[in-house]
Image (cartoon, rainbow, N blue to C red; front, side, top):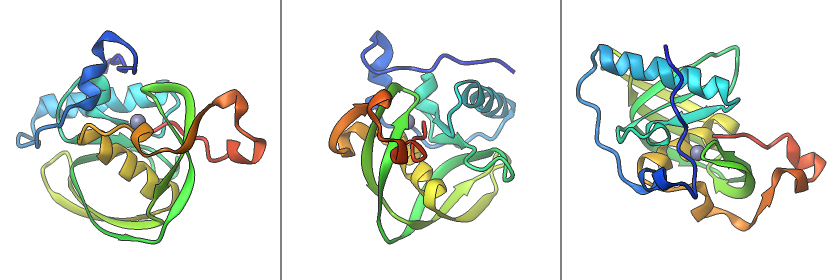
Length: 170
Ligand SMILES: [Zn+2]
């Protein structure tokens, strides 16, 4: 396994964050290696989600770990098929260090995706997990959360204490 560099905004490499990704068609060893590297990189950065464009790879794929008991997920070719409710909360991004903003996301959703073996899976998610899936799926369409922020971006030092528990890097 190897750590990958996380592409940050306001750097030379940032253009990759605004590009669309290609669907994954080959479920081979190289893909498994990428998934392992992305998981390691996400944990090292204390994030709960990381999308392939954030490590410079324009493939439709992300990893997440919003609940240590559930462990790591590798989500390939995600399609959000049903959404329910609304939730507005602070979120951040490993590509935009220390800045947070309130974003409206669905409370619950259903997701179809491929796993690393190319098998189709379905998942129901709510709360932070649903938020993470939306944030990462946006990355795969070249959309940064900052495009959806309601109000201002705030530095983490300015977040009120009761907001701090919502603060997650995705
Ligand atoms: Zn992000």
